[in-house]
Length: 115
Image 1 (cartoon, rainbow, N blue to C red):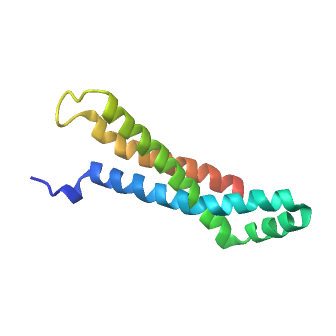
Image 2: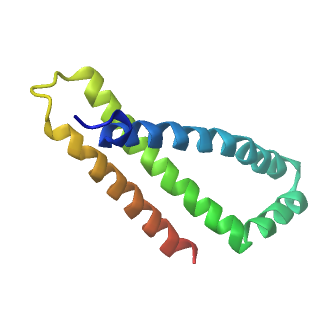
């Protein structure tokens, strides 16, 4: 018997929760940028200059990865909840790998557009 914490579904659970928390931390900064846009061009230009720093770009890339993970693992959860399982070794467990791969692909595409 496999330990519960060493199971693909457990890591999908953790990935979904951690990516959700990272997105929740990001939201205030997003609203700050939108608020600066309403204040005028000068404050927004200062923020956009800050956003050009390499560390900020890497953080944005990580956020896009988290967004992809949250989306893929969230869809997986919805399918698990709304469709019946046929067997305990159902093929849906392999969706964890496909979801991770999809999130990484989205991150690479974003990274190519940023740099």
